[in-house]
Image 1: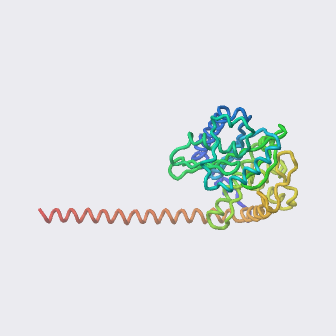
Image 2: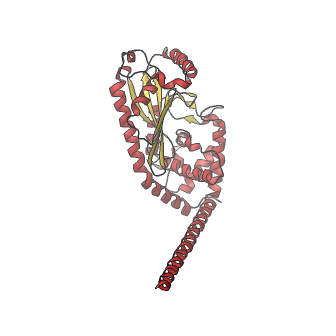
Image 3: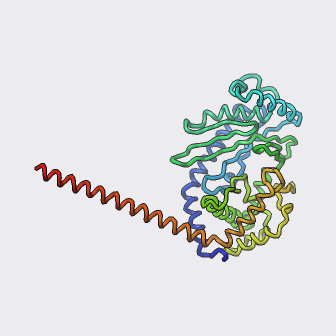
Length: 352
């Protein structure tokens, strides 16, 4: 049974609720990290020509709650000869893995004059970012990536990944390692293409991406899936960019869901490209976006299209049961307290 319009509207209400809860928090954190990175690059790394490019779903304001990590690229303009130095450096770092604190470069020393690798820049940014994080926050780096976990409030945490990337030819095509996988992409063009598609579809493209992220999370939280694809950088945005604009037209999201699903089901996996203008296939074996992820996405979309109404019904019933159980528990506790008060009053009267 296809998802109903009533439940589509219900899901949009839920999204609006979470937007009100989390968007301001996310925007504030994103802006503060961006400001800190720019200050560090302008003050300490200006001789190395390092600039900051906000990236990922927060840069295009398409995060669902604060589940996905924030991403920033620190762009290092360098010659390809630096790669040999980086290779040797990584080898030495492995040998000194238990003595990482002793290999920090003094950021104020003249040693900054030599050609810096992505690892050098990551070390220096980590050292300077320590001034911006709180006692309950965590920060460390590995190779070309700085990892930060901010404890915002209560149980709200935001993960930030800062990648140091190379721009060898000054053409905007960055080369870098993303969690062990080598990337080569025009990152700024990718973001611009996504923004333009969203304008052409009157916002439906990114809105639909967030709708799917929310539904996928429900599958994970209900133990119907172990893999949350949306944790992968720009996963939904990249895949759904390949769906023609015409399938995002209109206001009937039940129809949009059907058109998107049917289009993707007839696609060959080689047709799905990263939308940075380089015609780079998104999915490969043993790659950041593995072939199995696309297969998993099609299965999830098919299941969600046919079963979302049931999922919502079950979720509402479960919530009602929990509320009734809590109310019942509260009533029992209140009755016990009333009985205690009654006993105390009786005892007092007896003593009198």
